[in-house]
Length: 228
Image 1: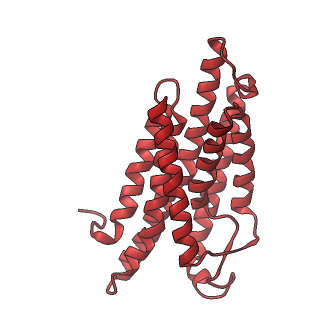
Image 2: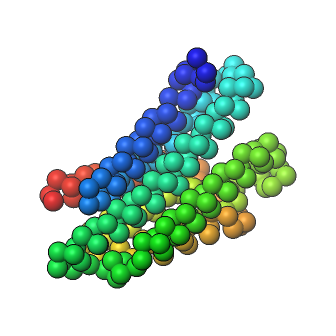
Image 3: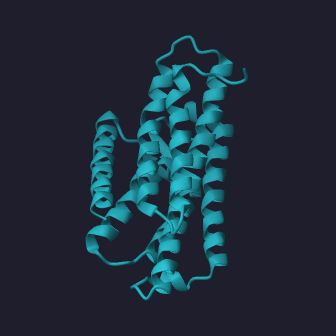
C-alpha cells in the first residue's frame, strides 16, 4: 500500500476525518455553523499533539519525515483553510433562511453569493500560500535562515481553531446576530497568514492553556447545541 500508517500519522489522519465531517455537517441543510466549529476545535486538538507524537519515534526515515510534513500541510489546509470557510457559508445560509422566513437576520443576508465565494476563495488561497511556503522553507526555518525556532512568521493557520470558535461563542452569548463580522474577521486572518511579522511561539505552558480554553469552548458549544 502507498503511504504510511503507523502511530506517527494517526492524529493527522484523525484531523482530516474531523475536517471532512465538519465540512459536510456545516453545509448540510440550512447550515450548521456550531456543529462545524466543534469539528474545527477537534482538528485543533489533534494538530496540537500530532507533531509531538511523530517526533517521539526516533528512527523515522527521511521519507517518513517528508511524508509527515506534506500530509500535515494537506490536513491543515482542509481543517484550518476550507472548514472555516464552510462554517462561514453555514452562517450565510442561516441568515438567508431567517430573512426568508421573516426572522431577524444580519446584513450578511443581503450580500451577493458571488461576494461570499470571492472572500472564501481568498481565505483558502492565503492559507494555501502560507502552507506551501512553509513546506519549501521548512529546512531553512529549522536553521536560522528565516528566524529562530522561537518565532512564527505570520499567523499560523492553526490559530483558526481558537479564533472562529471564540467568535461564534461571543455571538451566542450576546444573542445578537452579527454574522457579517465573521467575514470581516475571515479576511483579517487571511491577510495575517501571509504577512511577514514575528510572532513568538507559545511554550508548553501556554499550549496547555490554549488546549484548556479550546476544551471549555467545545463544552460551551456542545451545551448550546443541546439547548437549541
